Image (tube, rainbow, N blue to C red):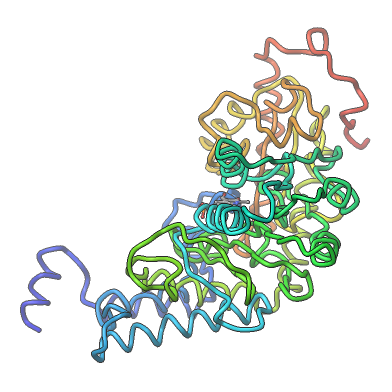
Length: 441
Ligand SMILES: Cc1ncc(COP(=O)(O)O)c(C=O)c1O
């Protein structure tokens, strides 16, 4: 006991009771207290598709599992049993949040990328004798696209369905692509860049009737829109805790009862022998708490966020000339606003917004830093120079009207400044005017 206190002092860790008191005071002010803003120097964070803040209630749920109930969930002693109980509770919470028939259909992973890899490679290799054809779309996250590309090198054949100008595939396209040797369909629930929702229930219907496995990457959809795996008729669904106010580096794969996947990570018998490695106990507890919190009153929360998103979108369209919205107005993630601003680079706008205390993105976080335009924006038919001028704002429950108004007051000046310096202008670009809308008078 004394030595613990000594260590805490040496590491400059506040006494536990004080730390808990801090967390509790945050909680009493709601999940996303105003103090958070002060701690973050009044910045406006609109990059929630890249990652979200851990909700204080989620953090508090995790804390005991670092220092008090820290046993190995495979151990038989009290500490181990406590850890096991917490994991099984998180499994129940996760299953309930997505309407799974049983908690046994939930497997914890190291995040969205691992869930996607496992579902796709696991299904491909488990069904290799039945066929070698996989159907996906051109706008999937790289966790899916690069996995499919790797499978092509292993002899699988992959169809990448094109999307319409708003980023959507139709169920009919999927149906038309099915061949005798099709073993897997993988289509994302919601696009991470432009927020397009895919017709998952319709695709699920087709896949189930044709007895083809159906996986959906729901990393951006879980916690953002209501999802029920049974109604959607999906066989596998990927999620990632850090996208819904949980911790990073932990995710889950829903794998419907009876669907056999080859194992990716061999070793111990964890996750019923399907995914080896000592479980990320605090992370899994955090995922369970986060998904429970995120899916509570989701319809109401989503409507509030969508109203703020529309305020932002309409405000940008009315205040800045030569801007277009990427993705649909309807059938879109409630928190996603993606626009292309003609004649300037998204990266330059990002840097200027950052200096003004506003965090946004010019594509998916994983690709920023690359000079290639986003594959999603190219797939919806944007010319390179327009794709380069894209900006993505993604809101959260913590976003306020005042923050949106600050962005609307700040962005037009940044755009005007950058346009004044831009070598691109109306005389040098080849983009047709119909691609853009004019500001409302
Ligand atoms: C649609 C989609 N799939 C998969 C991932 C990968 O998730 P993770 O970062 O947890 O590996 C992301 C992350 O941005 C995503 O947006």
